[in-house]
Length: 264
Image (cartoon, rainbow, N blue to C red; front, side):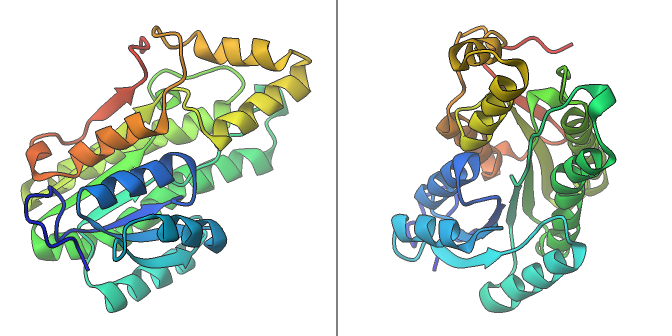
């Protein structure tokens, strides 16, 4: 059950987080639970989801579901299961994603399609599945985790960058459609964030370029004027605020969490 303390900003709200098992998704789950929300955790690995659920306060997690967000039938089934077992959703956080790199002329069809499927199509499938509950209630929050790559672009990640630009465009379009229905749709755009996903990218740079691990990290850090990596909790703070009634007038925005990185 949700936290019964009405002073908590998300008390009584049901939130579903995709890609919730680690990194930014896990940080968001911890923060929304602290703010009183009841959580459904969705991801590919059930073990990671269950480990996170065990860490959170008793009753904070209503359900953990293993699901590939790139499979529209699996998404529809998962959301129907959640709705039947736990009731309607008020908050959706689309966090599931992947980031693989390759020079443009060595970006395979498979890599291109995988980046679009996981990062863009997965967000679309989940938004489509969540909207009926929000429309029926006349209230909802959809928060898509995009990237600064979707605001400016980076070399060697053309497929990922295209997908994240798509997420921001999708966010803005849907925000206009539902603006008069009590629903807001926003994107949070982290810069390089200290997660396992970032470490995977660093490992790829080291393997493909022969740079040292320190040199690869320095190349990523230089994008942030604060000279550091963003922390997952900082992204979670932005998501938590956008999920509250206080953010009712914030709609169709791409909020950069990047230490002041200049967008083109």
